[in-house]
Length: 289
Image (cartoon, one colour):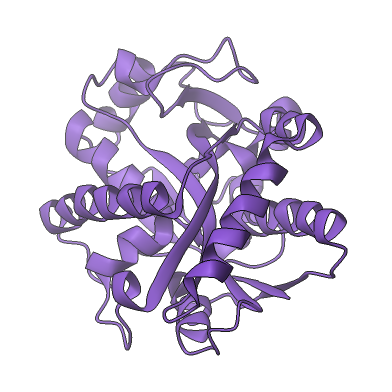
């Protein structure tokens, strides 16, 4: 069985795909291959699964990026129509993180620094229209600051951040946590409405900007026309996997909380998030590069 993800090795999607693939493999006694198909803000991966045989052997690691892309791009497929939600896996805060050369230690200090240096602070993203981009655009709008957006290709954002070529990043805690723990990047805030257990001393962004909330979420989808009984079985097996204490402990160590539920529950989340980020894209006039 294949799980296809669209942001490349070392990305948050890749980490989640490998965790759930390993867990399902142990549970079902069947090998799961993780296939990295990075490019086009993960649309290449989504289209590959949309066009795959609906036999349950090719699955998509769905993320917030897919909800953003539905409004962002003119696609050769309809994500909501062509990919069937199977199950949620995990929800992870983003972390507003800066290179140590940035003098700000808090979000208010960063806003003041940005206002004193309009257009001079490089805001990294994992690609134009990626969650890491739209989360930054929402921050710019609510904080009233001018940051210069620099898109990178997927996980290539971290070398740029660590080198100081980029100054601020709204990155998934999942892929950022080790850099923050090592002191290579400084966390100013998490973007969920409650603090993260793995960064308990880091405040929430909504303390400074009350209307701000963003999170990365991940789950599994399948090609449309996949038999309902296959969807139901996969949903059951994924829910068993994510309920295991060992799996939950691994997610918690990376800052994630499990996203259990039915295929319909996951479908509602996708629909709600598609509408939310669609509004941000229109307001910020984000166009694909």
